[in-house]
Length: 395
Image (cartoon, rainbow, N blue to C red):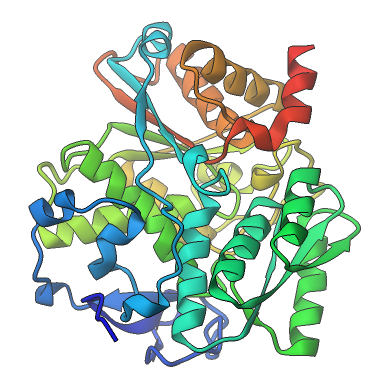
């Protein structure tokens, strides 16, 4: 047994504050149904940021701030350590000092979902779980199937028929048990809940496990390191369930507590959603602390077509505390954003991050960005995940 030197101490419910030891496997919070969040003994850290900088290979370079204690339980395929790609043509077009893209499409299954899969399947391994399950719009299910295959853990993935052929095929290629249901993501979630209760499955779904958002947190840790322990002025994030947005916010809070940031001014975190499904943007516009579920969601960006995100209070906290905002764009604008990235920066985006770039371009056009701003777009997935939609836009 080799220790990772993780500083994790316990789980704490974000909603009610109840605490649980690390052997606890009943998710979400048994007291209130809230989100369980790993907590760390930051005062015990025995590593410098210079040592962290010298490490390479995957998101597990930040192992002290991840909730896995034994290296034998880490399930990894080199996820993370994705590049920041400068886009000078986009910066000139938008009238800002810098535009850069964090290219999560370079992860093993081509999306940022690999970070959450690596952490959550490692968590399942740590807790000696032999069988897991997840509902998904597509990418998270594919990632879970890949990482459970590597870990030797059985996996059940619930997708709706609208998921693309790449995702459905690869789930089965990795040996996972694929369940297809009619309707959209909420229907997949409902069916998943019924199956989970019937079979007693261990869930690795969004915010139903305390491990998954910790993997997404590493995206934020990398951003601050790649900006020389500083931060961009503005971060635009394509928001469905909001795991990555919360991960970046949590990364900022932890690095501030450790005193590792050169400037503790946080980046403004901006929510980008589809005008056909914008519950968090609507809540921001109304200055509410929680969203209202969106009726009749409709977007070709399935990853941001999430009508009832359970962690909206946490997302809204991140937006309000950092001075961010919310922007809803049409499907056509999201597709144009993805094409702008491909044509002006060479970075292949799927529809969801195209919405983030379109949101930034809209704010620039409205004069809401300054000429000295550094703007970062999170490319959550490669363009090969959305070739049908992109081909439609090209035509």
